Amino acid sequence: MPEVTKATGLRDDSIEICLPPSAADLLESMRALGYSFEAALADLIDNSLSAGARRVDVRFSPYDVPYVAILDDGSGMTPAELTAAMRHGSRDPRLARGAGDLGRFGLGLKTASLSQCRRLTVVSRMEEQLSARRWDLDHVARRQDWMLLQLSEAEILSLPLIDELVGQAHGTLILWQDFDRLGAGETSLERALGNRMDLARDHLALVFHRFLSAPVGGTSVAIAINRNPIRPVDPFLTGHRATQALPPEEFVVEGERVSVAPFILPHISKLGSADLELAGGEDGLRRNQGFYIYRNRRLISCGSWFRLVRQEELTKLARVRVDITNRLDHLWKLDIKKSTTYPPEALREGLKQIISRITDGSRRVYTFRGKKASDDRIVHAWDRLIVRDGVAYKINREHPLVSALEKCIEHDHLGLFDELLRVLENSLPFDALYADMASEIRPATEEPEDNGDHSLLALAEQILTTLGRETEAGRRFLAALHTIEPFSSAPVLARSVAERLSS
Image: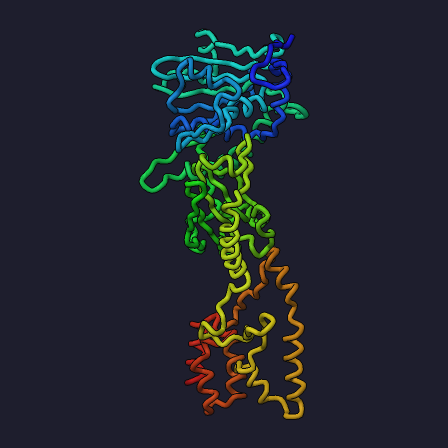
């Protein structure tokens, strides 16, 4: 029966009713918070890193008594600290945390673990003390109360990987067992667990990439799955020479610094297969654009502009790294899973300005991949002109090939030739070109022919003959041949052709 007492300090002589939740029912309900397998693992690794771990080993075995284990070399816990850590809501989320603490609600260890299994065991070693506590949902259901189990020494020594923990000076071992949900609807628990681990490897490589990569003057953290090291995945491709790192900016919100660093990824044509995989693949380029929010260097959320700008194909190369501290959690609407955030109003206007700057740069990577005619010495076949309503593309009437054709055409037919050029200019398929570039369809290019030297020589000879070998126009044409399209695509060959025709 609920405990009923006379309330004090309340109006209308209210009665207090102590109504604790049903332990078994609440624990079963909390399993449906929405943790994915990989997000649950990441939540536990947060605890390891907060405890100062430099090595985190994720082990799993689908055989005999299947288990997933997380073993770290962090500071460990005393028996009293371990008991407190196993309490649901072990820490007031409103209290300030240490600068490097990745926790928040005091729920992650329990809710993340029990979302994946029915039996959670935590063993910790500190100051030569070895202690273990266990939440067993079936035991809680039998007792109908919050009954945490304290394991005996014999029970502890029978656990998987316990020898490795005992061999360390300090650290913690977290053990998941009894996978009722993981195996549900699967023909093979072995296959299901293997698939989950593949997803987890990719997820952890991204979420903790800044821990896996040693910072300047610092040390990195080693995370492995079944002894196979996880390699960091850098979503900004900072090691690629074509990545554009724009100047970072800082904002101050409630006395805390928020660092914002924009990046523009290289165009897909400059990415190798390995770089493209790191960028998320061709589909991922568009899907993964936007802000990447890091809380104490741990990735919280990514791939969203927070409705500050619309996602589009031509901004897909823009990605923005935002670093926040754990003292701004209440403003960023951080959820229990630490996977959802939203920027506070005090910061949104500044982010909008940054978005405008970097998305323009991303668009330019697509729309201005070639050099502007006004900025180089190439005689282009097309001129790009700035007009009142935007831009226009016109065939270069000064191109030697155009000039040569005009000389060949009878005077009565020059008007028809000029009309042809205007039709080509006015029927340029802008929409199709835009769609092709945005969808990453690479432009087809003709393979060089074996007689490429002869082809260029024949074209140059035709133009020179028409312009006149001994004329000023002919001499200028040969002198500038290596700067005139299409000869400029092979400047060495063009110079060779010019020398041959000059002799």
